[in-house]
Every structure is written in structure tokens, then in C-alpha cells.
Image 1 (cartoon, rainbow, N blue to C red):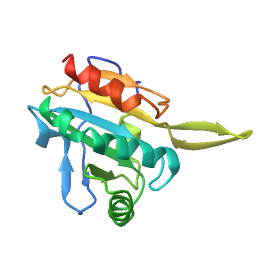
Image 2 (tube, rainbow, N blue to C red; image 1 turned 90 degrees about the horizontal axis):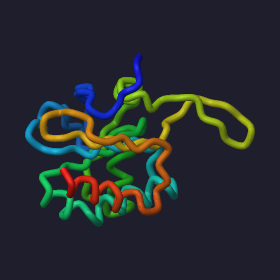
Image 3 (cartoon, rainbow, N blue to C red; image 1 turned 60 degrees about the vertical axis):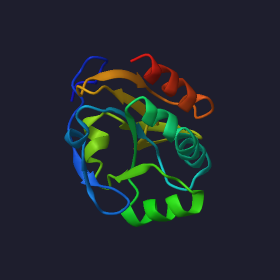
Length: 155
């Protein structure tokens, strides 16, 4: 699959959220979407990122923007993560890596000298017309959400 870039149409998907409700990208036509991929629920970096998106959710909403987090965790794991961390954002379960592969974020990683396949922490900003406006790859959590919000304000 070719690598996605700014200006490309965002690949559509339909998967379950934490409440086992089907979420499809096309359901959000007319809204901006922050689609962020993270490795695992209830881990330090992923918790910080989700809690920061939660903290700024209302401000994103004022700019017609919905936040959708995606990981390979189950719907049940997402519900527990939301309860444990007091989150108010939508988390999508991609156990089969369907969206991960469409968006090119399931790739070879290196950690402590070992190579393995895993989720590359990546955020896509998709505009109201379904086009990718910005891609942040290999995201460092600190300051990331604020940077995404500033970009959304400029749309």
C-alpha cells in the first residue's frame, strides 16, 4: 500500500468503539477529525496522550473537530481505560489492524535491540471534506495535543 500524504482522501473504515457502537469515518462528513493511533491502553504515554486530548476536547469541539483514538485493544479494554483515566473521547477497537494497515501505522519497530511489528504513534488531521490535512508520525506525547489544536485552529 502506498504511503498516505497530505491532500489524500482519508481511507474510510467502520469499526466498534468502546460501547461496541459502529463508528464509520463517513459518519463524520462535514466535521474535522483528529484520528490518532496509539500502541496500548493504560500505558504511561498512551494515558497521557488520551488524558490531554480529553482535557482539550471542548476546545476541539468549538472548531468543529471530533477526536477518535485507535488501538488494537478490545472494546472492553477501551471501556476500562476510559473509566480508569476519566476520559471523554471516543476510542476505536482495531484488533485485526484493519485501520492500522489502511493508514500505514502498523510497521516494524525497534526497541532495546529487538525488531517487531507494532503501532507507530501517529496522528492524522482529516478535514470536513475527508482529506488529510496533516500527518504527525512518531509522535512524542508532550506538547503534541496542543500542536494539533493549533493546526485545527488554522483550518
